[in-house]
Length: 164
Image 1 (tube, rainbow, N blue to C red):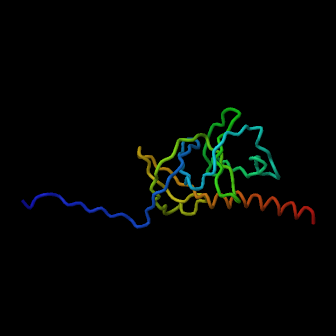
Image 2 (image 1 turned 90 degrees about the vertical axis):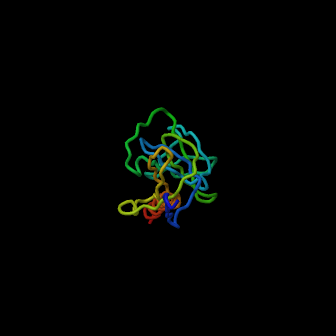
Image 3 (image 1 turned 180 degrees about the horizontal axis):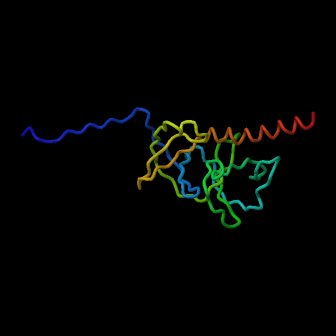
């Protein structure tokens, strides 16, 4: 008697678990909160249009900004074929399309806050460690919406300035 081991586990209070949609962009895996995902679709390359230097696409008579995550995060990727996977995120009044390479699926993820140089990265809310030990960044949909809507606002301001 009197022998054995004692273990203490300390968990930070800031940990949160969310349902995440795992997507691949190049060799990177990102998690998008499922609560922000409206739908996913395949889009023909010919359906992507340029509107005042911004890429947009038509979704049931609604014109949405398109954000290519490979360009935003500077990831090398091979664009193959005539179709692209798009994840539409946001709410009913604010939406933006995120271009990805492939859908992986849904998974419960633990949000871990980032420190140092990643805290100022636009569009990143935190990170998670997947079941296979891979680190995945969690996208901040609110910041991405602001980024996509800001593009639209900049475009409108440019048009207004041109008419003055």
